[in-house]
Image 1: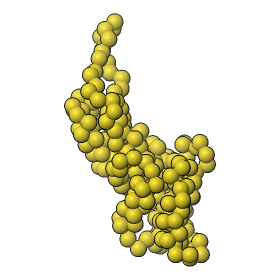
Image 2: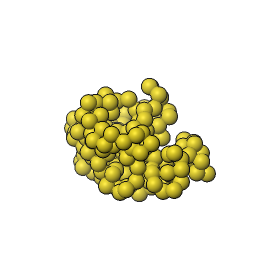
Image 3: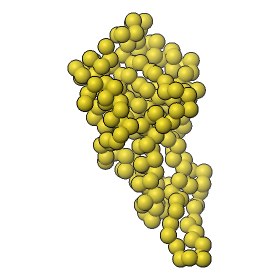
Image 4: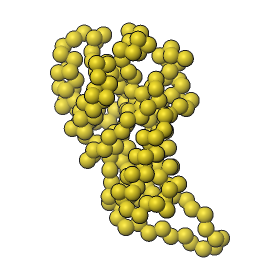
Length: 191
């Protein structure tokens, strides 16, 4: 049923994950003279930002949204954001087993959204990846891409706001297509 809904543009399949960006993430490896230590000053290791992101398995688009932290409130808010972004479409969400992905608050939200409908008619359905299977979630690769892009621009990262801007810019201005994503397209019979 889901494959038919996705092909008919009535549903979207998204892989979700959270990323915790820290001020110290701008650190990476740099080239220096042999025998000399290279130091890059870090003003505040404690500044951080949590992002929720959802990879559209068909289009490769990756909407992100910042939140104070990863919790039930942020998770529910992000699902509402996705509902606004994909109005009228059924959402099939694939994510890890974080405690706030299984919380009572989230279960209550999903029950209200699906209004006691049979599973085939649910507007929002959530499935978990296998435990400790980060390699299955293509969203993990995108977060790595964003952090790598930000580290390549380390010389522009004079403030944490600059770190956030560069990280977000690197994610928002790319349509993702890589082998792991291709696996999900094949599973949906879209290729």
